Image (cartoon, rainbow over all chains, first blue to last red; front, side, top):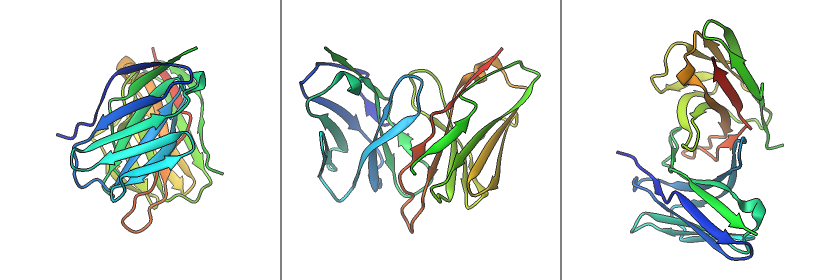
Length: 110
Length: 115
């Protein structure tokens, strides 16, 4: 099957770094994405990485990709209360079907 | 403009009603999607339109009827829904380029409650 696994919940203190992990299954995935969803809202694209890269940095966000282990992570530096949300990873192999992870709820404590 | 606009934001309907959800994008994207999302779950793909033609139907019950009047608009017609159809319905679009499907851009969703 095509299961993309994420840990359910992460709690961090404001100002600390957060690391959200994702394990995907489709080795042919060419693009991997991170989305943020706040309560009652749609999914907001945060960043994405092409499968021939192992790292991408975008301001406070760092994405690491380990293709051998099919492991993707999102690090948020200096986490703020506004970062509290559900984070979904997603994989795509060039079709119209994106496989979303189970989602990680991030709670930032002031 | 990286916006996908969905209306209405909230909809309450009875099981015998007919209603429609609407989605609009002006990014020139040629693929448009409907997803259904239950609470605390990832989005589930329902339909994909590519260049205004239905490309994917994920075995969705016929009480959901998609329509793509033009490259900017996507509708989802609802008829004789069940209470278990209550969910957040998300529209998305992407810009296919060669072998690349492109990033999905989502709307804010339409929260549907079926009584």
